[in-house]
Every structure is written in structure tokens, then in C-alpha cells.
Length: 424
Image (cartoon, rainbow, N blue to C red; front, side):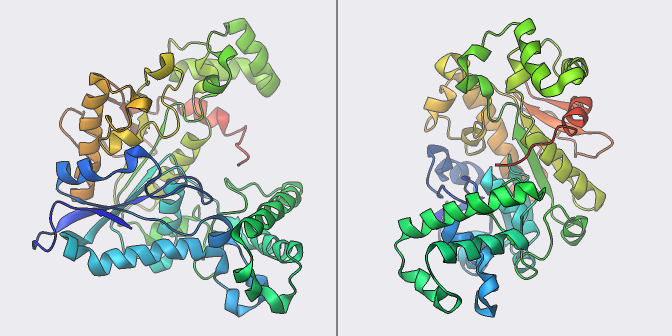
């Protein structure tokens, strides 16, 4: 674990912000990106920032429960590592000037998925009081039917019989991971044929009836955690298609329509009409760059949370466009991280390090700090951040000039839900 604090053993009770890194449940670390450094956030907000590492991929999410009670929780040990880290924070953070009863968990991408999973994890109850999900509303965990198949297949690939499972501890990691990845690929094909499409297949938490009793999309999860305020959001472009396919950057409307018709068929004009409502004055390139993977999930999670009629939800859409490399990154996946952590200089290869980036980072990081302190993200330089409801659709649109939008893309999202994302 990494801890940044303005003071140790000084009797202060500072809000605590626990960062969960991205990389799905397969990769990444608590110190992977320059933006993850907590120095500026801790100093600026007088808060304690914590980041951590935990078991990933085959080490963290190999479900061996088919081999007996000894392995009943094996498919979720990576998730249990997160619970253990939060228990450590609860027991020890006062020595680092932090308040163990005012903890905010926040994470991006897979880290947002970890926040979502922890909300659904009973053993994590009481270990955090607020939650922020950034581009990570992963609401469908693995089904044990398939995670157990993966475990059985791994044992077969390693030539281990049921009574030899403990010998996995002696197998070199590269060999174990290779067997695990091959098993995931095999079982994924079986699952596709049976119509099972989670957001992440394979290395991810599994609904085991013990560590994770319910799917994170189950309304009962939000009824049981209704007192936890949340910030939920995404970036406007996420996996920006034109970054990887240069021909899209100057594409004509006629050529764009030809490409769109391959996906939407006779509904292409309906898509274009809904897109124009959401993004008036758009460029043809935008038709391929605007995110339709993470935002629908974020709206679904906010709607589930709102139905519990508990603590408020604050929704955002990060639309700031990076000038780096002639603007090809746009507001890509991870782009908000330097702004949340107020680390524009450390991340200048991504943000460009210009004045506009510093100004937005000052406002956005203050919003995250204020939310950690009070549960309300209102911050100087931003309009009043109205809580989200399904009726209002209030969403903070972060840009050089930030504003609150109300259901600006509702018709577009409803259209896209008829063409569902099939997962990674």
C-alpha cells in the first residue's frame, strides 16, 4: 500500500481517499501511471490518499471451488484482498492522520469495477462511506457456472487431478497464467454459444454465494447500500476509434453513412437524428468517437442507485479534448485521471500541460476532495452540481466551460441499448 498524508500521529481526522487502479482485474498496479501519485491531492485537500496492489488474473480470480470447500472462496481472493486493504485502513489510518469513519473509495476503468464490486460485497460493509466510479460501471460479474469451468480446465491443462490442486502453488507463474488464459479463451467460446456476455469474461469477481452473493446489477445491492453517496461518470470518447484508425479523422458524411449502415442498417437515419440531438454541430468523426460502451452502464448504475431512494448520486461526463498529437487522443479512456489527481504536469504527455488543463484540474480535483469531505462535490469555479435522478438526468459536463446537462443524450442512449455491447 502507498499512503500520502499531510501529517502523521498529529491527532487530525482527515478524510481518506482509497484509490483502486485500473487494468480490469488482470493488469495494472497502484503506481502504474504518473497520474496516480497522491502528493498534490493530499496537500491540496488536507486529505489522506491511499493506493494499493492486490492479486490479479489467475492469482486473484481462479475459481477452484469445484474441488471442494477448501477452495470455496478462491474465485474472489483478489476481491478479498481489497476488503483486507480496507480493513487495514480502518484499523491503522488514524496513525496517518486519517479518519477511519470517513473513507471514500474511488477507481477508474477496472478500478471503477472494483468499486462497483465492493458495493456488492457484504464483508466490505462499513469500511467505506462514499464511492466514486470512473468509467467502470461493470455491473455483471462472472457466473460461477463458467468460472468453475475455467478452474476445471486449468487443472486439466496442468495435468492435475482433483487431489493435486495444491500443487498449483509450485507451478511457475508464467506457466500458470498461460494455462489460465488458454482456459478462459476456451470457456468463453462455450459461454458465447450459451448467450452469456458479461462485461469482462474470465478474470473478474464471480457470484459465489459467499464473498459476492448477488450480481452488482441486483437492485437489492443498492437497497442495502442506500446510505452511500456516489459519483458516477465516464469520458465522452473513451476508446476513441479515430485515434487508432486515422482515416476516420477527416471522414466525409457520405463515407460515414456507408460505414454506419453496416452496423445499423435501416435504422441509420434514426441513429443520426438521435446523435444530432445529443451533439448538435458534430463532425462525422464524432459518430465513431463518442463512447457507447461505458456511458450506458453508468446511466444504468445511477438509475439502480436512484431507485433505492437513499444518498444522492452525482453524474458526470468528461468532455475536455486533449491537444496532444494534434488532438487525436480527444477525451480518451483515462484522460480524466490527471484532472482528478491534479497531476497535469506529471501527465503533460497526455494533457499537453496547458493553462486550460491546469484550470480544469483545479476545479475537478476540488470537487473530488469536497465529495470525500462532505458527500457534496460542489466546488468553486463549477456550476452547482445538481444530483442525478432518472427524471432530471442531471450530468456535470466537464470542459473548459463546465455546465450541467439534462438528458442531453437520452434518445441516443436508448437507441444504443438496442445494439448492446458484448464485453471484452
